[in-house]
Amino acid sequence: MSAYEEAEDRPDKPDNRDWKQRAPIMVATLLWGAAGGWLFSLAGIPLAWMIGAMMFTAGLAIFGVRLKGPGKSRAIMITVLGVMLGSAFTPEILEHATSWIVSIAVLLIFVVIVTAFLSWGFQRFAGMPKREALLAATPGGFGEMILIAESYGIDVRSISLIHATRVMFTVMLIPFYFRIFEGYTPPTESPMGTINDLGLSDGAILAACATVGYLGAKRLGIPAAALLGPMFISAIVHFMGLTTAKPPGELVNLAQIVIGTNVGCRFVGVERRQLINPVGVGIVGAAITLGLAMGAASLLHQTTQLDYHALWISFAPGGLAEMTLISLAMHIDTAFVSTHHIVRILFIVMSISVVTRFLFGKPKHDVN
Image 1: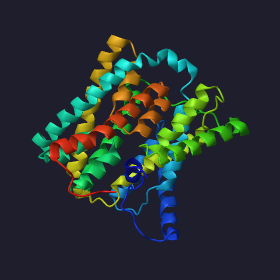
Image 2 (image 1 turned 30 degrees about the horizontal axis):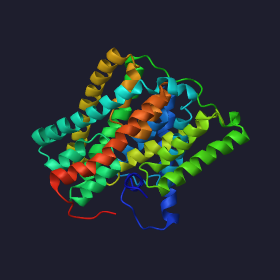
Image 3 (image 1 turned 180 degrees about the horizontal axis):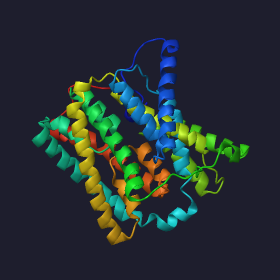
């Protein structure tokens, strides 16, 4: 299991209780998430199933309700999202792909500048030590930040809360922005279609993309294997024209519930008094990054004529799965958005260990 998956699959402290004891709690947690998603969908909130699940479970966790994150089921649902994202890579993508080079290059520069600026700010105004500030400021690579923090003996709970808050705040704010300032209203029918629309042969192809992609990427040790593996295989299959099918809306909504619940459960076991500093730092960092992302998107839009909304979501500091779901809900080019976030995550994953070793020396502890 890669570092990304290991950290992502443990939203709360692992326990050794028997599965028969843990399963009812996990089911109840997902039902709470589903209830939140359903209520938010009735209210016409964009990305309702994920935001509702996230808000409900986070609130319950903060007030001490016994919850258990989705665990391994999260990886299964992430494969659905990966197949869906891969379906956006049609032959027509090649006509536009060359125009993405400039925005991707600017994105990498943006990540370096934002990390350096926030790291300085966290040290200057929040009094955070240099190591903790750097890991808290990096806009992505949640799992890697946790494992590196452990290797240097840094407070893991503080780092995890800051990043969980970053993702939650970003995922909440963007859809509400579209709802209030862009006049977005959710469609009455899912653009993915329904299970009844999916033929047997197409369903088998999509299932094969998910299974082969996930197992292959996991075996190769690729970060975010559950998402990137199925997406890669699905992109090849759709690019070759073997199918034009997409995962049905029911599965995509279920994936949103699981992903939202997973984020909410990151607040399990946290006392309310412990939330003030990490959550405050996370919100401020996310707000600053979103503002800078808007500025970068505006400048790039003026110079390249690329879509402003797609650029903003591509530069926003949310999670890879969450931001690509937002692009789907907003009917924004998912191939463009997912490609930029994949590059961002891979860049961070490949560079952060080198940077920390250069700045702070060899880690004191080995974390497997």
